[in-house]
Image (cartoon, rainbow, N blue to C red):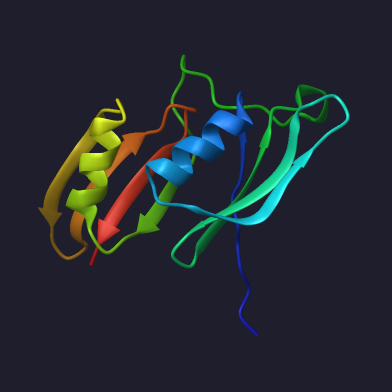
Length: 127
């Protein structure tokens, strides 16, 4: 049996993040959003192709906080997609700038990277 590692992202506005990931990255909602009694997004699971991630609003009292714009990020999310250029066109059209690419980077293939509006850094690869 293979092991699996699934990222769990924390964002400042979970509902806006769901909409952005669905509209721009083409994500599907795998597990419906769970709203906490205080109105915060407690949990949702999203996927692009077979790549899944979980997400919630911030819960500082549990040390679950969104990235801050005043520092670098210790983690980059690596996502393999069938069309890096097409996805980059949607990302830029949504008002997000690319940090790199799209460009050919042998032996990886076609690549690009960006930081989403919620502070998370993504690396896209098209083998």
